[in-house]
Length: 159
Length: 106
Image (cartoon, rainbow over all chains, first blue to last red; front, side, top):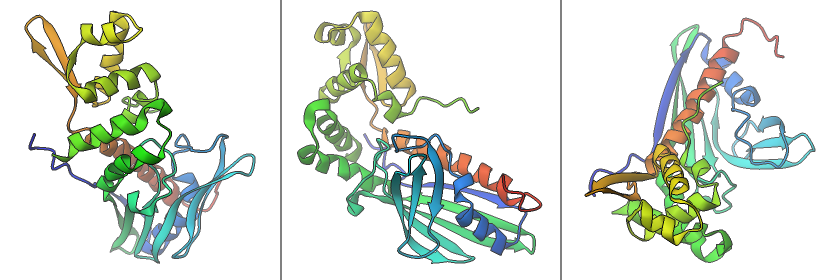
């Protein structure tokens, strides 16, 4: 197989009618209203999502019972231009504890006019989740068969 | 409100589909082979294969009168498609929020 030098990022962008400062602050302060709620790794419904506005902070979902799920680490926080955070979520939508097996998301804000901002989002290094599947083979309970076939699957993706 | 295509990770949430997927990871197989190896009927296997195929995890090809199923080597595409939907949906929600005239957040 030759064609799957698979693109390892997802890129998307949008132009919004807002000044760059507002575009940046809404993205980070109102992230709660942006992230689709159905993507939930908690056992209960999500009450809200918190984006801690600083490098070293986290993005986490808070459940209606107070439980928390920290699924991203803020790697760069540069208002109003750029924010980068890790994506500590495995392809099975579970928290990935090993930072080596996480991808990252960069969001860039580019002023096109005083009241218009282009927002470019790149979710990259998706292949890092792949090798993680192999590593999971030893550590994860094999009862459900995940590790073995995911390892085989990732091998298939490699060649 | 959005009609989601079945994504790979949802498709693998079912134990029978995981069993089928695991066998196909071992080597390509026909429907009949899978049905004989698993405690499910042939029509059920076909139905599960359809879900796996829709999710972009397996592909099939004709071999005489049979169809042979194997894992889709571009499975990482399923992960990308999943995330692509996630971010497009997020940015659409973001645009709606950021373009609200005032902070009547509710």
